[in-house]
Image 1 (cartoon, helix red, strand yellow):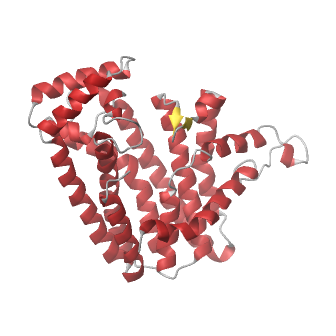
Image 2 (cartoon, one colour):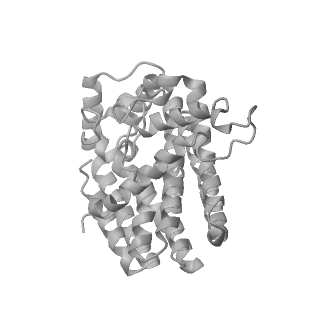
Image 3 (cartoon, one colour):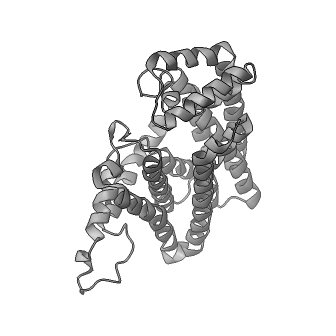
Length: 347
């Protein structure tokens, strides 16, 4: 079955859950420290909800929120708990995006103004902070008969949040590395993207009551999915299918990509020059269109795109094999559909 068709039945429930969280002001966390008995009017409460709603309104595929819901349904697991987990992961993911936009200075997210451009840097940081923490409370406040599983999922998600932040620290600091290697860049990608996918897969396994060994295999699968996802993103940028105009938009902004580092194995001098230009781009001197096209051609001529495609195919295949074996026949159909969808490289 088409992967998008597998997700569609869950989308309205996820969107409604996220919307209700913003309407509850403090993202569903009790407002106990208010000056009046009317907690609904506590200072800052409504503003927080409005800011989070503004960011969520930029859209997105909601993959991290929908994936555990589809997997649990395919395994005949508890739908309500899967929705709670999916909403928690999706909210955390979007919190990291709010912070990414602040740190990268990005003014557009999915073609719309980023939150910090609307409300300022301090308030966007505040909103992102709340989006990282509130979902842990949602899981801890699971119904009484699910409280133990909710605590297990909250611990899993909390661990993933710290791992993701570590990846962002490495991403911001990669410019301090004089000559980044493929391992350096993949390490950043793995830490930034793998942990939340790990929650999607292992969280689904927990809700399906699968053994610990299967849960560990889910985490191994998530490592491969995280790497495949990020290499795919770099490939989409290289071939101009990332929805950001001409090929090489990441290079224009000073972002190092996997195909570029792989090309460096064939031309070390060219790579040194590219690193200098990327550093200049992050300092306010972005590459011109003609120069971007030149470096995109350089990557292709030195085998960067071909090597990245091979890496992507290998990581995607490893993900599909491990996740399918860990989650069982029903969820394996969802995994297979996801792998096929990602493999299309069509945006």
